[in-house]
Image 1 (cartoon, rainbow, N blue to C red):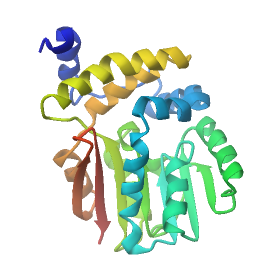
Image 2 (image 1 turned 90 degrees about the vertical axis):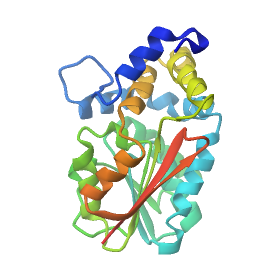
Image 3 (image 1 turned 180 degrees about the vertical axis):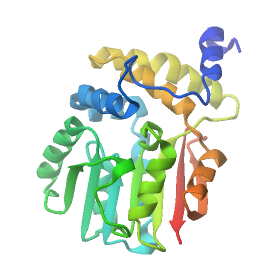
Amino acid sequence: MHFFGLPRAFTDYLCSMGTAVTPYNSETGKKEQVAEMFDNIAHRYDFLNQILSLGIHKGWRRKAVDLLKADNPQHILDVATGTGDFAVESWKRLQPKHVTGVDISEGMMKFGREKLVKLGFDKNITLQLGDSENLPFEDNTFDGITVGFGVRNFETLSKGIAGMHRVLKPGKKLVVLEFSRPRKFPIKQLYFFYFLKMLPFIGKLFSKDSRAYSYLPESVNAFPDGEDFLNVLRKAGFTDVTAQPVTFGIASIYTGRKV
């Protein structure tokens, strides 16, 4: 527990496991706080994402999107789309008829739409305001759904997963990429050090909203990863659920199919 001189931080971090966390100490709900947080950091999000992940997230994203290839999806939904990176990857690698991205942060999507115009994908990808728990689509609309680093921000996880199950066509697949907690030495200790010390420090250097980069490790820690998340998928009605850890378990790719 004294590895890297972090006894108290490490202990506090472990003690917070499984507790509900929000970006700010506010009376508003988690959903509103998450939207505010991403609006605040939207102008720096892509830049910091590249720095903080050392670019590793790009390989994770490609691997996750490729899990939809066998289904040849033509209408894809990307939930918690942010600045649209997952939506862009889906368009590039799967060549569907259309990709729809939804997010609760208009600030993030503003930068996402500018990115789509620059890439020439604005006719193929639509970004619109949307809440995972109240998706504005008919039942059985999409033949593929992706979520990249977004499910841990859902206000009510089970409701958000159920909402995606509702709009997914029978027989089609949901793919979720999310941070998880490594279990093995020394990756576990290095991970805690980076998330607890380095990530918030770097975030503060480049972002006016320093709280956002403290919330990240807290939200990862509170998220029910691994088998616990597979159980959430099962309860929502997904079958053939799988969990694939990537890069020593720093993140995991989850899949589930709607019957």
